[in-house]
Amino acid sequence: GGPVSAVCVPMTFNSQALGVLHITGPNHLPPDTRTRDQFIDLGAQTATHIGTLRTLEVTRQQASTDGLTGLANRRVIEARVGQLLAQVVPFVLVLADLDRFKSINDRFGHEVGDRALQAFAAMLVDNVRGADVVGRLGGEEFIIIYPELSVAAAMEAIERLRVALSDTTRIDDIPTFTASFGVTHSSVGSDFDAVVRVADAGLLMAKDQGR
Image (cartoon, rainbow, N blue to C red):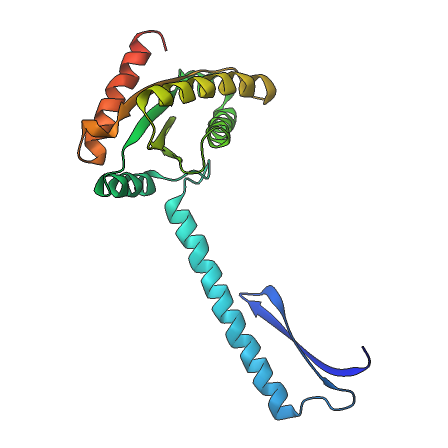
């Protein structure tokens, strides 16, 4: 509401500006040199702390997400499945695999192939519930975890995914492609690998029967 004295201490970390420590006081009574130096030290310490936390968070995200699609990676998916099994929470596990993906790379190049993977990942995320988990196992293979959902309900959800994928390939600047799915219930196994094996068998059957 009027004139003040002020000291502005920039806060940086690894040459990146993070903010400003702004101290005000009565007009014509700025902080003395000792106080100002203390604030400069405080600003440096705060910037180092914030910068370190941000770096740790970026590292954590990189360790838990797929670099191309931003989805959860295999390590995170395995941990989530293990948690659900330990808590005896039933779930449906779905493996999804892009059909004839190699031909997309061969005909259009890997950049277009990457865009197809990203479009498929975004389509999955847009068509699941908040509690569901979507991840990329590697290559063109994806996984969806539907907690507390029946297989019948999951099949209906997958049909919606199929329709959404058809819409996606019409809108996005990518070649048309389809995907095959393998579905199983958590009751078929006691660990991640056991449940995935059954879903993978279903996925192979879908491929064999025409994709």
